[in-house]
Amino acid sequence: MSDNAAPATNFIREMVVKDLENNKHGGRVETRFPPEPNGYLHIGHAKAICLDFGIAAEFGGACHLRMDDTNPTKEDMEYVEAIKNDIHWLGFDWGEHLYFASDYFEKMYECAVELIKRRLAYVCDLTPEEWEKYRGNLYEPGLESPGRSRSVEENLDLFARMRAGEFADGEKVLRARIDMASPNIHMRDPVIYRIRRAHHFRQGDQWCIYPMYDFAHCLEDAIEQVTHSLCTLEFEIHRPLYDWVLEALEWPDRPEQTEFARLNLTYTVMSKRKLLQLVKEHHVDNWDDPRMPTLSGLRRRGYTPEAIRKFCEMIGITKFNSVTDVALLEYCVREDLNKRSGRYLAVMEPLKVTLENYPAGKIEYLEAVNNPEDPEAGTRQVPFGRELYIDRADFMEEPPKGFFRLAPGKEVRLRYGYFIKCNEVVKDADGRIIELKCTYDPETRGGNAPDGRKVKGTIHWVAAAAARKAEVRLYDRLFNVENPGADGVDFLTQLNPDSKRVAECLIEPALAACPVGSHVQFERQAYFYVDPDSTADRMVFNRTVTLKDSWARQNKR
Image: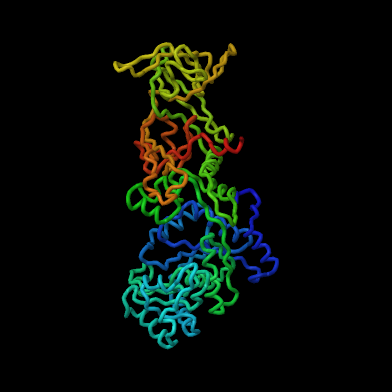
């Protein structure tokens, strides 16, 4: 939710209100955010984070951060620390409630033993290929595994030997005994434990059997006394197993799973597998590449946590899957950066301008507004002299109708400065324009003419004598199609080859003094972020988002 607004209502919030009115769970509200530490969080996780932590905060409860580390082959402490950093950056805190699924491995093992004793679980010897045939399909019931008829004693012995490491990976599994004719295939005796000899980043080599997610997840919620287990819609079909495990174990005050629609964005992939592939195959620089939808990537691009929280508030919580236009996210970023970003002068493609009637060697300082949206931001002094640079795009030798920038014989206003008129165009031997010879009107300092004449164009500039060179990284959308990978197309073939361009620009001195992490606007161009690669000798700016707002224009029609 936004910082100063009442929380937006949705079906989950209404459910929690009703539960509190009925004193369900003794009036407690405990939620959890349970990421698997096998990658970095992305913008889709931000929606879940805002919901999980927001609901808990609103109703005086707590949100647990739980690392679901049940798959040791893919998990790493690097991801744990990245997840914690991203959640804190987004503006939330779990306090004392940091947990790991691996902390409960012994308890989960005991629960599995209890299911065996109740004849609700058994050791199965079928290979994955054989199980595919036994499981049946949507139109035919499955067949019972030969292991289903084993005695309790034999299953207890085999499961203990699985834990002791007597069997090879994949040789045996533990299955829940449910219903091989269930219309929900996930309820046809699902695997709840498998053998996997892999070093666990927290448990070391203590275990060679690991619980499956569907078995572990509900137990984790129950052990932590979570009241409201909020999941995305793809887990809806898994909810019967969630409930079955807890009912079979007769767990008191059981948590309740509720599903909501996940976030899908145009021009974006959200699959962790695909994001990992982009990193491993070096299609991007790393997880924090500013083109990535990861929270670390968005942070390095210059997105703010306030903008992301506002975006999550605007898209809301529903039960129906849909695709959100990424332009809405960009709109939220612009709205936030417009309030906080200082305005500065920078020239991307420099074209030299010489003011022939301006005194040679003279430097004066013009007053510039730091941020018109923030009266307390004040002003600064910008150096001005005889030689300037403007953007090449702001001059045309033969301008079309409606071009209000600089042209031969035409007058234009310099931002914070004077009116200037172009008198002569200088070209090199190849016919390329290399300099404009102009004159300025000394009576128009500040951009107004005493005689009342008007000009339609205002352009930005930097003084040649004071200009600093800087690197700009011009980021665009990573993919050039709205739905990457749709219809079986290899998503890698749809990468945008122009998603990152590196160029050099000229900036005013004040911009060169901005610290790493600053949000700035290059006037008339875009919002930028001072990248951590910046040094005292060379500033690096990441383009966060352009000034053009396609979402706002569409919604004004």
